[in-house]
Amino acid sequence: MGRVQSGGIRCQNPPAPPELGHPDPLEAWQAMAQPDLSTTWLGLPLRSPLVVGAAAPLSEDPATLPRLEEEGAAAIVLHSLFEEQLEQEQLNLHHLSLLGSESYGESLTYVPEGSLFHVGSELYLRHLEQARSRLAIPVIASLNGQHPGGWVRYARQLEGAGASAIELNIYTLPTDPNRDSASIEAEVEAIVREVRAEVRLPLAVKLGPYFTNFAAMARRLAAAGADGLTLFNRFYQPDIDIETLEVRSNLLLSTPHDLRLPLRWIALLHGRHGLDLAATSGVHRGTDVVRLLMAGACVTQVVGALLRHGPKRLRGLEEELRLWLCEHGHASARELVGCMSQSRCPTPLDYERVQYMRMLQTFQPATAEGAPGPW
Ligand SMILES: Cc1cc2nc3c(=O)[nH]c(=O)nc-3n(C[C@H](O)[C@H](O)[C@H](O)COP(=O)(O)O)c2cc1C
Image (cartoon, rainbow, N blue to C red; front, side, top):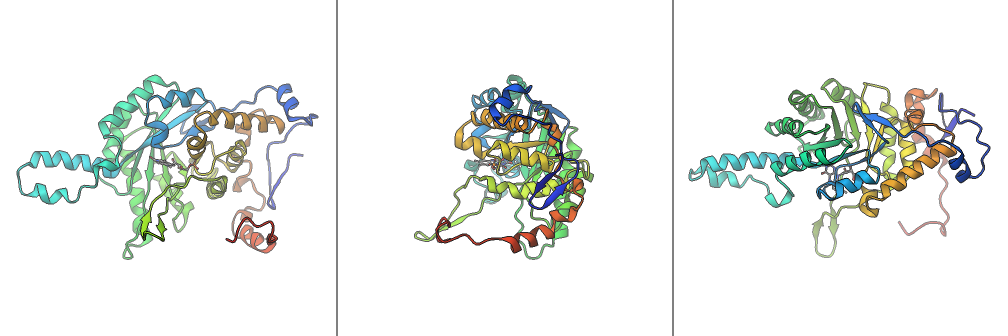
């Protein structure tokens, strides 16, 4: 009792479940008081760790937002306002002022396609104001970019429109062979500093895992003013159509397997640098939420599961989480947070290379019949 074993890692101080004496989970469920799901993220008190992640199909329609709240969303991160979109708007204003001058036609060639973006920044701000006035739960605005620059000033407007916090998504795909990793990391840090200088709002930084040393990056981002990290961006990779010889970009929704990467890094970072950690990628079941809380996330963001099954899936996730807590004798979700993080392990290196070697050496090949296909 009181010790959890998982994949060879034994952690100290996991929550100790009391004697249940209830082999039937339903009976246990009825016998116990409802566990407390409340948590805090970025200083915001939340009713549960179930946050709706950023995605236009979930947050763009004003009618969907109250539906998500009714189904139990603890907070909603709105879809992103993109650097390209904001820079384009600034450029368009500049063009208007130069209308008739020679530089107008030339600079138009630098403007990305306007149709890429669903709404302009004015509409986004109105949408945010409306959401804040209609919903009781926190509404988090999302800014999405990859370079320092004038677009970060919109953070202040988001604050003025009532955002409860900002999630800054730095989605970058460096391909220039002449740039070294130090300059890329410095640029990421500079964006965070610039946004921090604009607002006093709580600031979460959402980014991908591809840094030479993500732990060092996390520390730099904390020093630059981030209050939390949202881990990780999913990189949507293009495919090749082998018949038409076209590069296709079809979005594949995540599966629960995708949570392994955030799970590991959240476990490694929990309790270090004073950052609140949010998990995104692969949350489809109540037990996925449990895993990520144990690793050290204070909230889990859900997108793919809601796109597949609709807002009602939030209620299902909440019930699954409650049931798991009841079955395991926990009075609150907070008890779980970080109990399986690296800082609570007596053998912290097990989260690192040792785990990898053990996996390779203990793998059993599937039988031909059991294998799902030729791949
Ligand atoms: C259709 C769609 C639109 C998305 N739009 C955004 C966005 O505007 N900003 C953002 O930061 N992430 C966006 N994402 C990424 C999600 O917020 C989330 O990080 C990702 O889907 C992984 O979570 P999941 O496994 O629950 O789907 C989008 C994802 C999807 C599927």
